[in-house]
Image (cartoon, rainbow, N blue to C red; front, side):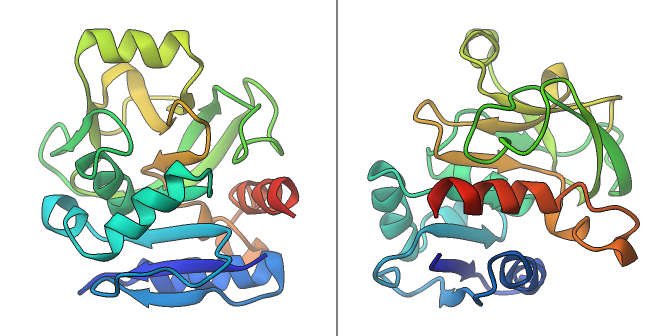
Length: 212
């Protein structure tokens, strides 16, 4: 599987994602600078990190949006989730954490949708542990949008307890086509036994299996 990691100024977890993808797929992803205007030909997975509205206007995001429209799987982790919402690929917005404090620790998640490209290796209702590390992870949307996400089964993960004030304890959501996932927890930080658990590895394994 050919993949790409979008690199924004000041980002660091893009390297973690590179290691995670290579460990699971056996092939290192292309590292694509945010000012580039095209993705590598044949890219099957796009992961990227960096926050907010400015990143969402980077030249490469037009190519990411076009790829998503063609059905290419797109994963946005942590700040990448923020970029997906700011770019209009996912609804809602990520706000400052309740209490205005940075949160960095493993958290419990409930798998709400085990039928997506990204979650097929999990069981419906399964509780897993994935680390978080964010200051602006408080997911918010209007009631109509939240009801639609619930009704359409587009909530991928939910916090087992209140972590950052997110509406309905949402930790990750999927777009209506099912090929774009945004999540605040870091699955690439739960990949190897040395990380404390391997609950994140199944996300990458399931995605690899789905697109192989």
